[in-house]
Image 1: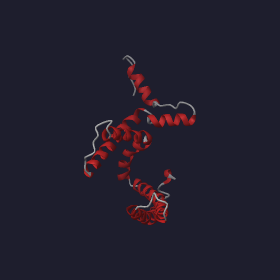
Image 2: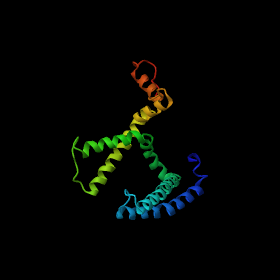
Image 3: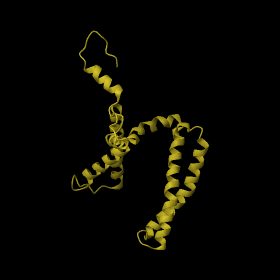
Image 4: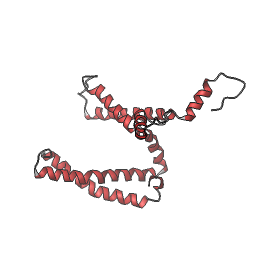
Length: 186
């Protein structure tokens, strides 16, 4: 499906429309129930809130996915979205990384920071995400997978997967050889 986005453009627009039409109202209803409380209690309002949540999450997620797939069809936006791809290829590693960063900054194990305003929190989160874009991009130049993705994949297939990219391994070996009269090809 993803390799034929252009052919599925009409379906993507339909998913976007239906996802928003169902997901947004359901999430608004869910939010109203959250304000009133009762979600964690065995009441009729808790049941309604659970139903609203169920009808809100999946359709809205599909709408978001369709929206980004439609954006990806625009060449000017595709280049930007491709810069975000390495973070997605290392999703598990980045998830654990930002959890560790959060522990270090916000708990007593680290700095214990807790007195920032919403703007500062947003800027902090943006800085972490930009850091993860750079580290993921650099990491994936040399390796096939993120470290945790590699462990997960190796465990799934029951054998160690190739971690280092062969092209880069050849470049490193050629660079490490003593210079001779031959030209080193990279």
